[in-house]
Structure formats: structure tokens, C-alpha cells
Image (cartoon, rainbow, N blue to C red; front, side, top):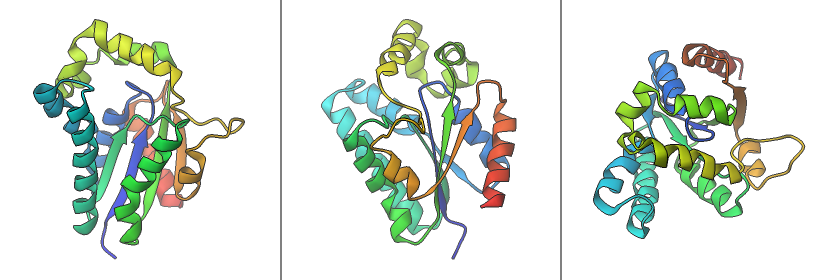
Length: 195
């Protein structure tokens, strides 16, 4: 087997998925596929959240993952995932299937931080450079607050539709409220080495 592996870094908006993903890539042979690699160009063409935008973001992500699995690429995928949605759990399960079908390892890294921390991070320079849609602070902050009615982090006391997907693969939950991206990447690296 080659070096191909899929790591899905998920959590609420502005939790640090991109910066932690970059830090992991600096320490490994992973390549980073941000959810915003599809969001930004499609929002420019079709508008954020429109039917063609939604259809194509899902299709583009699926195709990139299919080709990455076929090419044995070690890939980090970042996403916001509504863990409470049964349809969302099915979609994520289908999304990672090319790696599973190829017999390649799949892991999930969950990042968690409170809303105040994420609102501060929402204005970070790296975030704004990589994600032009976030430069409208009124919209972006409102988007973070609107997503609070989603379940974006696990809780061992609360069963969720996402539990079966996570249980089928390695899963690490990190509260990165007080962790730098480098410290989070070190923890992820140690966790991977122990698996």
C-alpha cells in the first residue's frame, strides 16, 4: 500500500481547521484540500448558497476525493459538518468511500472551541486571505452565529446520526481553544503514531 490516507478535519466555522491542517501538512506528506477551495470560485460565479453552488460544491469535492484516492494521495479534507443531520452523515460516509474502497486509512479529527474564540479567529489575516467570502464581517459573523443551531461537535452523552460514521474510523476530538495550530498538529501527529 502507498502513502494514501484521508484525514477529515471537521468542526464549526472559524475553529481552526485550515490552520491546523496546514500545520499537519508541514509535518507530513499530507496535502490540504480546504472546503473553501470549492466554495470561493463557485460563490463568485453562482452566488453563495444557490442551487448550482450547492450542487457543484458537493460534486467537485466528491471528484477530488475520488481522484486523490485513485492516485494514493495523503489528503486532508476540511469541512463543517452538521453531526445531527442523518442526510449529512450519509453524505460524509459516501464522500470518504473512495478511500475506504481502495483499502486506504481514514481518520477524523474534530476541533472544538467556543463561539467567542471563533468570532475572534473569524477576523484572522490568514483566514481572510484564503477565504475572501469572510471579508464581509457582518455577514461572516452572522453566519457563525446562524450555524450555532447545528450540532458541530460530538458529546458522548448525546447520540447523533454521525456517530456510526465516526465509529467506523479513527476519531480524535481536540479542544483547540487554547492550542496553537502547531501544538494541535503535534497532538494529531502523536495520536497518528499511536494508532
